[in-house]
Image 1 (cartoon, one colour):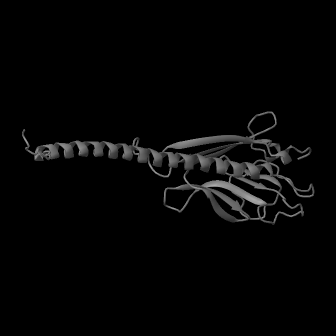
Image 2 (image 1 turned 180 degrees about the horizontal axis):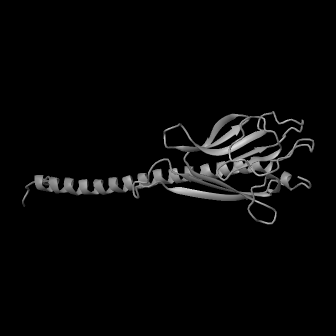
Length: 216
């Protein structure tokens, strides 16, 4: 009987090198998948933020425009052809849509019904402006009683279109019955795969109920 003890052989240097090479290949593949997923996650976060900015801005503008013209009949109603510049003073001198420009809108509403347009939130202008100056970033601005505050950043475009009751475009303040708002927001950073910003456009039509009052 052969009583010789057989011991298991260890790995040779070549086998270890092959195993390490295979392991490195697998690790590189896993890391590559991780990088792709991480990049896509960052892109999705930016897209979500871009869309949320547009929806938030639209909600705020629509809510305020819905109240345009609210107040007692003793206040002077806005009439005539819209001026081309923003109102220079606050409070505004008339009630309703004060300026109906394609790039900005100014409105007034006597929210507490006290007969004067001097309280917070009763004189508003929405526009797109560079913030800070020279940065190349444009924000949606909300000017309330002379004080401007940014609503959302990364706004590529903002337009307003004003319609009469019959659906035709008008620049007569007394005839405005519907306002179409279009806002385009973009991602904070360039998409590496395209070299461009991603953009999202949201459009909505608002009917300020107080402008529908007879005799307005």
